[in-house]
Length: 604
Image 1: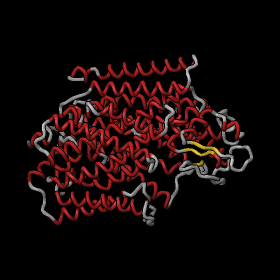
Image 2 (image 1 turned 90 degrees about the vertical axis):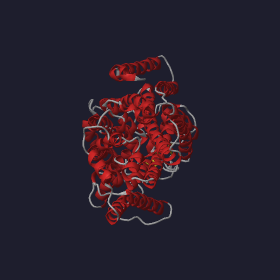
Image 3 (image 1 turned 30 degrees about the vertical axis):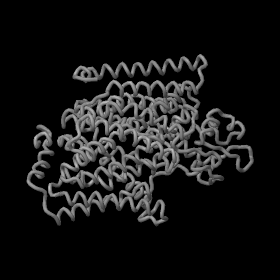
Image 4 (image 1 turned 60 degrees about the vertical axis):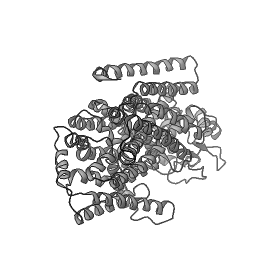
């Protein structure tokens, strides 16, 4: 995949790919009519898509440094927007976010607001300027802007902690999908998912990941939109579920009252599985509003601090293309985020409505227990039912589900064809794999380029640097799969932690590095170290040491502690120490000018 011919033909290539994928969906639908089992269809969907991604990764293999780290800086804005959206549509977005809204209602929309709004910060404060700077990685920018290996090393540490936390959530998602689609234990599924992730990214670095992520976005957006459109139409709400979601919410609230949601409490506990006993929650005031705003703010700041996202804008041909790429990213992300609340609502309707054949609450317990999808999701430990009161009827507080499977189980819950279940599994796998690829690459690149090449062995040749990066990819992936197999927290929780770590340690050093010439090395070191440390200590205190919450700030929003500490430390220490030299200040001025060659090209 070299040269301008490939770049010029991108619309044609991915048009053919999309047509081929749709043809595969149609083929699977025909095979279902001829009696192919749902399990076989699910396996074929996963196998076919992972094979395609691995093929793209193989064709994109490279030994060129610029191609490996930044895809040769030749990715057009539209395709970089699709790749960024796939990078962003993680297991949390595709697999877990609708589940959070399903169980928690309005409060979980803070994730949607924060993750989407964060791109406004990326567009206005970060992406164009970092592209103009011309670096390979985020720690590369920190190390060059502030000078010295200490600042670079601290940036690497924050990046590794945030990205590793995030990548365990993605491998968790691949394990969830693989365990159900392939009928294997979750602990084995995470290693299957890791294999697919490494096949995509190991040989071609950012170039391979970019073209794979474009392919993965096409799969995941089709897989996310099709079931909810189908359900909306099937339930009489029309073909535009996002607009009809308001009416569907009203219907859900009536059914919740019928089934005594909010009155009946869970009668048993099934190891982390939840019962739908909390009613739909509207926007609140006071503490509820504070929690919503703080969570949204943490997710926004985290979005603008996560290195695997900022790295995507290093791959565009120009600063102008980087700006355009952010706009395209927002459009492609909006398609999914605008749909997530509708999907959660229509899925809830499918379960609660006794008039629908798929409704299970209020039905005979024995009939529900015999349903194929109930048995299969129960077998892998993600769902449970229990006739606790012995009346032979399934009550709302006797149905338990892991929030992470709401999207994956929706086609079966809604009685849709098996081909749709296979499609959704493939979409979820694409979402988790695309983000995991970007995250593992961000960590490996930072360690190989900023730690190994810039600090440990500056004389290392290209081949040695790229071999080190690939070895690190495998080792980090293995560690991520091991941690994911332990299931220390749910997917959404792990992702929130990653955003908080990044925001606590990197947000203000990145922003002030662009917008405040007075920010210096000592200030950046203090800001990264103290902000990251404050946030992390608060998390440890409330999560594992039994400490009290401050102002309702729980483990999902601990950046509200870390970020102010980072800002104050950075500003105070910068003002108390010597200002940056004239060359650094001139470099900051040049970074804000859209045109011309990159800052690093001009200074080296």
